[in-house]
Length: 319
Ligand code: HEM
Ligand SMILES: *[C@@H]1O[C@H](CO)[C@@H](O)[C@H](O)[C@H]1NC(C)=O
Ligand SMILES: *[C@@H]1O[C@H](CO)[C@@H](O)[C@H](O)[C@H]1NC(C)=O
Image (cartoon, rainbow, N blue to C red):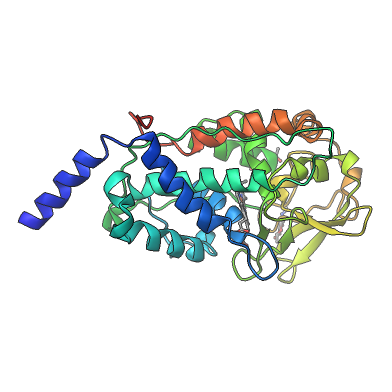
């Protein structure tokens, strides 16, 4: 009883005073973890922290990831690494911010590390930097009473995809398109989602390449591929230099009206060449972001910041 009370009191007192330098110290620990390259010289935690920030915030950011939910498959590694850091009381993090705050901050650092690895800019331009403000004070879930969450479907049409983000986060179509640029990062794995492959070749470099590859100017010829014996579909395509790319329906629908079957995702109208289907209502937004990395990065930063504050009120800036 006494022990419980002390914990509760210290938690309440602590979250009232995070300083900027304390936040910078936590960010440095996170950057050190996320910027670690694997044997292929890639940083898989860039994508994983950004995906985790999204999944933790569906239903309200609360520091709880329900691994009995199939849509969270693949997040175990990043959650394990972040929890090990958060639960190590010697670094003081858990005395300062909630676990949900920590996951949100990890997402920000993932975006920042990924953006620092952009390859696009030649000698005549400067790569844009993201600007996502961190506020703290999120309340962690009680694992015993966590409500079931539902995630968007990768085979859905445009209406359903926009509806998910409108009803869950109150995002406009434009905000949703900007946010989905996150799929420049990472890859899909058969053992997690059933889908396979990377949206773009470099999975830890964060720029507008997703929009470039979606739009006609990206030079990818997209056709639909059947997975799991025709019960699931995605889009595959090679670019001019022969490198492979993929898109989920929920990505492709931002550019083309592919009218997928609601159960399987199959498209009957343009399966061998997506260019045979008409443009989608959000096509111009995709083209705008494809043409303007800096403009997209600014809008992505704004919507990502809103996403990681979903479900919280009275968050505070570090002093
Ligand atoms: C229509 C909405 C979305 C759908 C249907 C969707 C679906 C998926 C799927 C199926 C995967 C592959 C998982 C695997 O097999 O390992 C994935 C990965 C990923 N998603 Fe999304 N996603 C959506 C929105 C978002 C948003 C809003 C973000 C972040 C802002 C995001 C960030 C990521 C990242 C970074 C990965 C790669 C993870 C990794 O490689 O570790 N996604 N998503
Ligand atoms: C969608 O696919 C399922 C499974 O193949 C099929 O039973 C159903 O009739 C299809 N729906 C439409 C509208 O074609
Ligand atoms: C989108 O898919 C949903 C079901 O998943 C369906 O009810 C709706 O009619 C579809 N909308 C359009 C415009 O195709």
